[in-house]
Amino acid sequence: MLLRATAGLFGLAGLAVAALYVGLTHAELRVTTGPPGSALHRLIATFATANARLHPRVRLVLVEEPSLAANAEALEAGRVDLAVIRSDLSPPANGQTVAILRRDVVAVVLPPHSPVTSLGHLAGRAVAIPTGPFQDDDSRLLDTLLDYVGVPAARVERLFLDPAALGPAIREHRAAAAFAVGPIGPGAAVDAVAAVARATRGTPTLLAFDEGEAIHRRHPGLETIEVPVGAFRGQPAVPADSVNSLVVTYRLVVGRGMLDIVAAAVARSVFTARSTLTAATPFAGQIEAPDLDEKAPLVPVHPGVAAYLNNGDQSFFDTSQNYLYLGGIGLSLAGSALALAVSHGHRRRAARERRVIKRLVEIADAAGSADQAGLDALSRDLRGLVGAALREQILADGGSASLMGTAVAHAREAIRDRHGELRSAP
Image 1 (tube, rainbow, N blue to C red):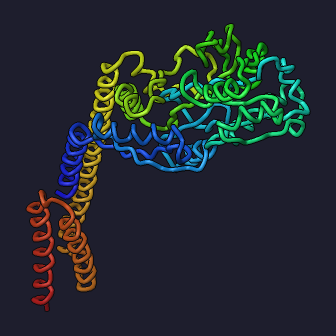
Image 2: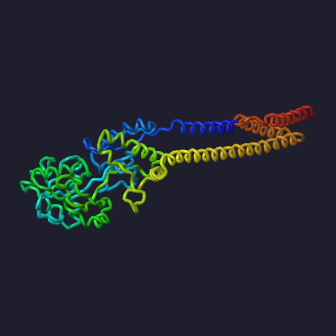
Image 3: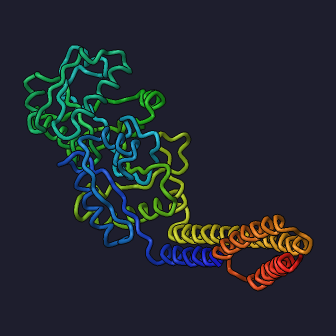
């Protein structure tokens, strides 16, 4: 009875879990926001609010980290489920891409008639870097590029200045160039070009990275880009001609172990909310899907996101059905295994009962010719068998209690008869 009840409870539990999965699926995901005060922080906070409306069953809990490097460490350590990272910094070993939030151009802004025509010419000079949440990351990126051309980082002085002070520093020859990392659009690079143009009353130029492909091969987090004419200023155009440069990407990544259906739900929210987010922060207008055809990517696309991007909502719902199908198979297998266990238990109990009944019959047969000492031994044996049988029936369903009772009564009657015979004998 107990095993059958347990099997029934397991079956009901399986049905309850399936019902909850279908009707009440919820996920609470911890997501890093990026440094406080940054555009990334505002974007992720706005996305969390929009996601609560678009996908109420996936709740985003904001986790503030002091830097983008700390974001990657938090995801790798399992403290968060999603993180915003920058591609030129060390990526989390378990990270997989959901969306590209922005591409920022690496811009070395030079004043008119600058003698600097390559990165190597910055040796012995100073470079102005705009202050902000990412100034240390930008400075490390400059170190990486200088190392590529063989210039020790210590030979290039850094001046961390307010964006408005970049132009005067260059005009007064305190800095030979401005180093800014920003999008083609409102951001640090556009502001640096405007500051240098105002201060010098001329047209700044951008340093070209003609060796960009080679740099990318050594540092996969840096990708190549051709900056179009007028990308950073319209009139006069900056750059005046298209320029080869480098970009870093800001990515929303998740852990490799995240379920496909959850990762797909996050991607769906990101791309569905893009227009809503753009109204709150222009940064969101640059959100794009990752390249599924990229070979050997530094941070690969999560399989659930790739399925969603390939097939859209149909893939999302197919994934849900797959999980339900697999869950049903699992419950079915568990039910079959439990049924086999119950059947095996019944067979073992029946075998034990047959052995007990056989022994009781043997006791009854032996009682017919036993002396007083033998009867006492048979009585003790009978009591032991009766006790064991009663304990067994307490745990069992009692289906064979009648047969067991008949055997016990038979043995007891045989012993009683023999006791009578012995008492009446001379």
